[in-house]
Image 1 (cartoon, rainbow, N blue to C red):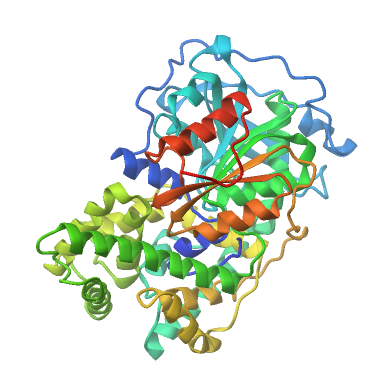
Image 2 (cartoon, helix red, strand yellow):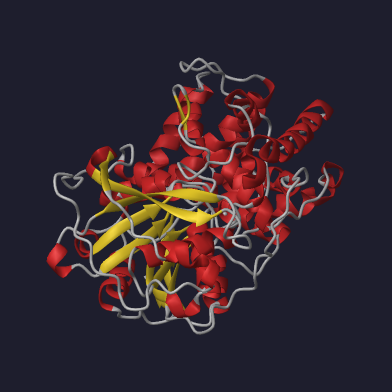
Length: 529
C-alpha cells in the first residue's frame, strides 16, 4: 500500500503494495479469491462485431501543451483479443518533458457496455499494486464490478507504464526473483542480514541495468499524465474512474494534475498521501496485525477446538512459531520448490485480504503444521503472480521501481534494529518485517524528474473515498485522511474485514458507489455502512 514506497524484499510487496496505496494487483487477487476463479470474466462479450464507438465529446482532445497534440489526437483501433474482449494500444511519451523523444505503447482492454443504447461512457479502472496489469482487472469485470456498472459503462483497463504489457520494467531474472521473494523479510542472523542488504542493492542496480531509461520514467505522476491522454483517446471530456488500493493514489494524483477533467471518481481502499514511509509502515503493520487477530479470534470462537490454540494470544504464538520453524527448516512442497520463510509470510497475509477465504489460510496452516508447505507456497505465488513455469507479470519488480521513484526515502540496514520497539508495538507478529521494509529503496539508482505533488485536487468534482474498518493493507484511517486531504472528498465507511469495500457483500456501500457512478448521486459525507 503511499506511497510511501516501502521496501523491497518481497515483504514489501505487501507493505508497499498499498503503501503506495497499496497494492499490487491485489484487487485482481481479491477478485480471484472472492470468486474462487482465476479472475477471468464469466461471460465475455462476443468479438464478432466491433464495439460501438461514440463521437468524441467537444474539447476532449485539447492537449495541455502544443507538443503533446499528436498524443491527444490519437484515435484508438480496437481489435478482438483474449477472452472475447477488445484490445488496443495507446502511445505516450517516455518523458513528458521531451514529447518528441522516445515513446511507450500502453496496453488497453475494454469490456463494452452490456446495454449500448444506455451507455454512459468509459469507466477507466486500476487495481492497484503498483504493478498490477489493469487489463487483467478489466477482464475480471464480471467479478470485480456489479452488473449495473457493466451494463452502462465500457470498462476500460490499461497496464500503467512499466507494468504488464506496457513496456514492463525488468529488474531481476526469474531465478533471482524466486530467491528474493523467498528470503527472510525480517532477517535475524548476520548471514540473513547480509543477504537482505544484497537484494536491496541488487534490485536497485538491476532496474536501470535491465530496463535502461524506462526505469526513470515509471512514476505515478507520469502514469497519471498517461491517463489524461487515455481520456482524450476515449473521446471523453471528463474521466470517470474507479481505482482500488494503489489505484487510489493514481486517481488522486490525476485529480491534482487535471482537476477540471475529473468526472465521477471512486477511490476504494485508499492510501494516505500525507504521511511518510515510516508512519505508513507502522500503520500498515498495525492493520495486518488487526486482520490476523480477527482471523484467529474467529477460529477460537467458532471452531471447537481451534487448531491454533485455546486463546487468541496462543493462536498468534502458534503462527509466529511456525514461521520461525520454517525460517530454520524450509518445508517440502509438491511444486518442485521448498517453502521458505519469505513465501510463508506472503502465504499467510494473502488470505487476510478476503474474509470469505480465511478458510484457505486455515487449510494452509494446518498443512504446514503437518510438514507440507504446498498450500502456503501456492498462496505466495498467487500474491507474486508466479505460475508453474515462471512469473505471469512483472508486479513484484514494478512495485519497487514505481514506489522508489515516487519516494526514494530509506534507511540503511544498520539503522533497522533501532526501529524494532515501535514496530513490534504496532504488530507483535509482523513488526520486524515492516521495520526492515524501511530499507527498501536504499539501493535505488534512479530519480524521478518530476516530484510527487502535494495533493488536494482543488476544483475537482466530488471524489468518493471508500474505507474498510479492518482493512489489513490500507488501514481505515488512510481513507479518512485521503478524504480530508481532497478538497471535494466524500468518505464512505464499510464496517468489515478484508481489503477494499465495493462489491464485498455490503449493499449499502455498493448502492453508494453505483449511485454516484451511474446517476451522479453524491453519497452523504461520513456515510457508514
